Length: 171
Image (cartoon, rainbow, N blue to C red; front, side, top):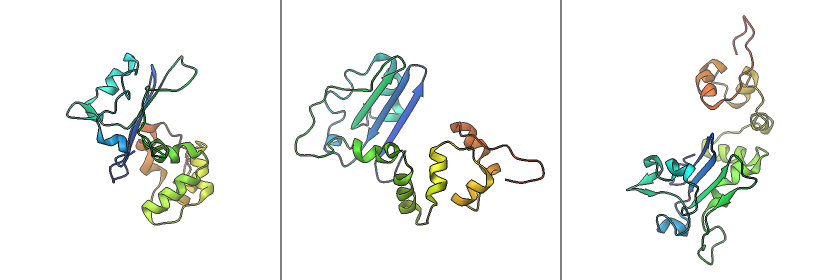
């Protein structure tokens, strides 16, 4: 996710687990790269992400929040961090992940409407959050100028299911 204003995050899923890196550019923790304690206890199985040049600038991980969970873990983990005092959201994690953690589609709907200046049907957004196979009708509710054919490749890349098209009926 890149919001165009300097905030970004990546959620990487692989065979070893999940690695999450976020950068809230206005966070007080953005002033020191990386913040002490942020990455020191990240398991070595995630080194390729901690030291990945895609997530770094001049060899420093660009992050104010790092979270991970190995496949066999029973909980999420983060570094042993002394957070700066006097800040409600010092690492920016509440801000960065509010849309993802909402889980109802409402936060995403508000965000998308703000970003695109158009109205989105909450029912259609909730269907996407429920991973409902994408049909022409559902897509039309979200973006009337696209067809499922337009999104076939993108859907395959992210693993989003497309409803089977019936012969003779374009979706």
